[in-house]
Length: 411
Image (tube, rainbow, N blue to C red; front, side, top):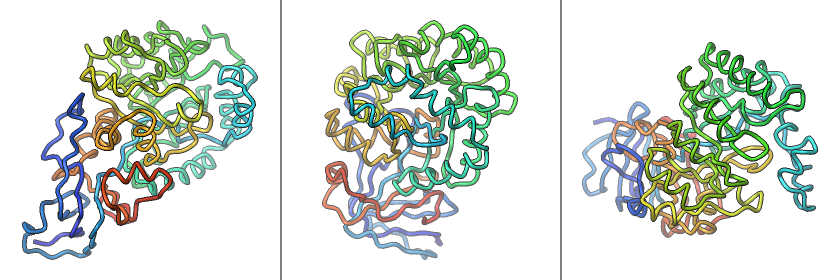
């Protein structure tokens, strides 16, 4: 038997599943299967075999890695990002420090409109080069699959430009990429809301579909942006063109976004800083995956999503980064797992399930990513020497990844 890579003497091989038929829900999220003193074999970019060292078959490998005192985990799956943007917005960061709210900054031409103005002036090539650097960055932090949204274009031409860049990231980097059309992110000053919704429905969606640029459609369902009714209308139109909905829901207010997501059969509703029993009850009767974005809650000083209430209701929970220039300027999924533990009172096991299997389900890549399973893509992390799995979110300022393997390639 000959393998490309053999990782031996693994202290703990984590998130081992013989199969992963769906999301992990409720109390089951507390279980993170770990094989102690393990090996992991990789062949042709896939996970070929694993088990305890004492059961290692007689074999050879092109490359052997000794992971003594180290853990091996599947790479993170980041199911909500705005990775394609033109420039940072640290001037708004200072405005926030001085007391300005998200809505006040937006009203002064900041926020999403600020990013849109910068992006509209940038060429597609330069936009790709800037995004490529961020893609390389999140790979170093352990992400192997990522969802990327548009939404900073706000014109037909610039929304298409963003999505073409996102598709190119999936072709020219090792990342597994899914793309989302988020034309309904904000209303440009050049349009009334009615006119802009018409533009999204009648011009943007058909143009995106014609170039086959988006797997999903998203709407920012929020007070001052798009109403529940508008969200449903836009999402339903996207579905006609083969784009499954995923909704920005309940970030700033009880916006009706969760209910809208459930009504249109959204694969996920993301943010959830402002939800209560009504929203939780709506989710209980659906297959929609609630997704927390702790980086945004932290950066904007918002309430964190009620993780324990969601899991106690028997629901799954996913965790993503929301990497964007305005409200979560990092794609560091290690930090998201730490914040989920520290601020949302999730156990390390629950947080790792939320950032791997459940985000893989929310991106519809569970057949290839999210767990250590034979036949899945060999995208895994090797930690530095650490005492336990709990140490990883505990050491919230530490880069605890020693090696990253994506698609069977050591990076």
